Amino acid sequence: MGSLEEDSSSAEVLIGGAKWSLFCGDSYFEFRSALGVEAHVLWSCTARGKLTVWGPGIGRRFLVWTDSFDYLNTLDGYAYSDCLRLPKTGATVSFDAEIEVVKVRVVDFSPPPNATIHFHSPAFEALFSSDSKEQVIRSYVLEEVKMDDLKLFLSVLYNLEFSVRKGESLEGLLRLAQMYQSDLVLRFCLDILSSSDSVFIPLETQIKLCDRHGFWPLLKVRIRDVPRRDPHFH
Image 1 (tube, rainbow, N blue to C red):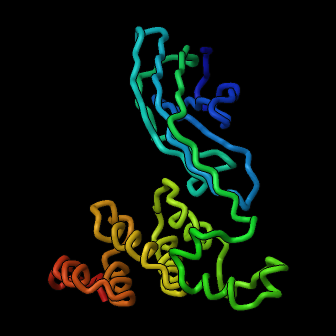
Image 2 (image 1 turned 90 degrees about the horizontal axis):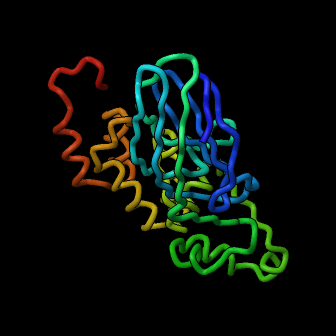
């Protein structure tokens, strides 16, 4: 409970192992979450709660919310909820925020690889078992691999809840899925391309990805989606 001016944040509180605060914008609010973990740690969190605001001219308003937060979609170290639209007038608004952390998943991929990676990637299984000396050292060189793409790849293997919102991220994930022979990650990417949420990826890019990775049934669907005589499609 407290009060906020526009473009300001509340003090942080620790709930469920994560730091939480509330940001006040122009007629909207956002919950912010941060786990404060190291770069080699992947995390996702599901939370829910209730936000009540009141002030001059608006009386007392509230809404119930639920959202997912993850390491991938962060800004300045914080993962943000969707915007919570509530009317706000005046320079200052009072609020009461309730937060319940439903689930937190944390994966540290710095220890030696385990059975999860072996099972879902034959290429990794062969890599980890090919050289007994390397097994002692626990050090492996992964050539031509971006760290962000590798984190996404491991997030799928460990079943972390996260969302892919950039076409470049999906392309990198598909590249690793094929490189490391992971059917699980390929299916994950296919589900994204098949869903109605894939609008963030240009249709031309979707067609190229389907053709490149052998998603033939979806390729036929996406080709039918191409507008006739579209001057922007090559």
